[in-house]
Amino acid sequence: MDALKAMWQTVPPATPEELAGARQRLLRGMHPRRRVVTGPRLLVAAGVAAAITITPLLAGTGPAAHAVTRGPDGTVEVTVNELRDPAGLEAKLDAVGIKADVTFLAPATRCAGPRFTGVDRAYGGEPASDASELRSLVAESRSYKATRVKSVRTIQIFPQYIKPDETLVVEFRDNGNPEVPWQLGAWLAEAGTPVKPCTPVAGAQ
Image (cartoon, rainbow, N blue to C red; front, side, top):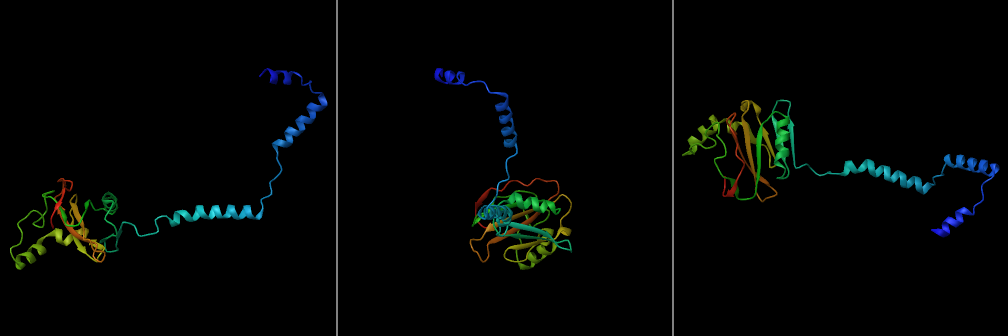
């Protein structure tokens, strides 16, 4: 440090001419000359810009886990490609006016019941004793009318069978078969009544 102090002390004071020259150099430094960008630099810049533009389009190019659309006749179509994010599917259904409780189950499991109070015998009621009674049960149950499996990945929901504040409770069980990926259980819970969280247990629906 003493050597540095001695060096600075030996610098002679600048003349007025030297100070004026230094000021001109400082002003030129504040306005640098335009830099020439060569061809390779332009190509790199264009490549970066293209990557920024394309990346969002490439992200998630595969099918979404699930999709919800409303048809012109008011029916709602639900496509389930992956059994994940039940809350996301509930939000999509809510956006089209359907209050839903969605559960995705592992193979050979079901939700322990009872979870809710059903609007009809489709849930929690006495099972049908024969084919004739089963047909009658289907005919009178709004739970059966409210949903229909359209294809191996798609169901249709018919809102006209769902009364205000009723909850559509749907359970998708992994079928362990890519050709028929899941099985569906669907019921209607009474308006204003809670639906308990699913506790998975072994067994069929």
